[in-house]
Image (tube, rainbow over all chains, first blue to last red; front, side, top):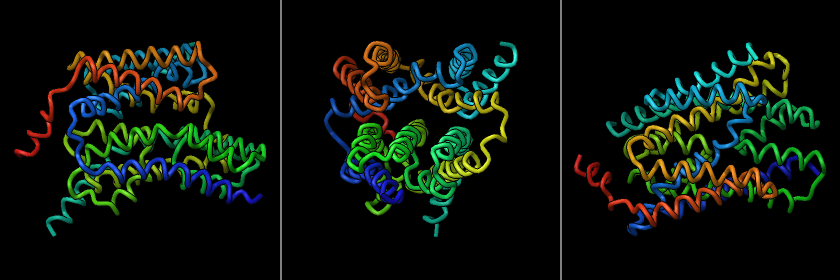
Length: 99
Length: 244
């Protein structure tokens, strides 16, 4: 079977998952419960995606922990996204040179 | 004319906010490119997979199904399970879009609803315009397809220590998004801690659940409980914005 059929199925399913809800929910939702729920969803999603996956993100738990600690500390002081992201990576890299 | 100017400003702002994502994507998709080449997929095919899918876990699974000669049904079901979290993000994001975000714009911008682009749009103060999303998406997609190309074409250029350290970039960005609001609001802190704890439980005690599905399950439970116990006062922020 041609690889392009596989790619079309992959891309098609993925796009439909994104576009249907985004196109259907066009009005502001008024229910307080649903508003609260949708307010919390991003934080819940991002947190569930980050932990525990971040500990395995560098292939070495020690360097990943160093990067996580730096990210948490800098994020606590509200530094910009790119600074936190790159500092976490730099910390993991430096830690990798030592361990 | 004035309207176009605003659109352009928003686009440029989006591009700026997309740089962190683009850099992170460059490193992640570099790994995807290496993997695809290893599975016998050509550089052009790998490039096209990245351009049309713009998703990490789904593409990695997709490539292994292609390499194993799986069925198209299997491909569709696996993509659905791994990527269904985007539906939740799309609903959440639909509530933050500005009033000029018409259906045709939604059809275009929906292409770019990824974990990271969603995260950046949610972190942005106020409403999200189509121009802003296009800006974020264009820089992010450029990083994603360029990384795929480089990884597939010349996977060994970067020393492994650097490739490994780059693996944490996107998670670092997620932390930068969830920590500041957790400081300000106890309810958000509770949601963040609960979702992280549930996610760890899924990973270590119920490993049979796929990663993408575990994320949606943990997020739904945490956000539902928080909505029950810490309901938000209706439309505080939106009223302020309307007054502007």
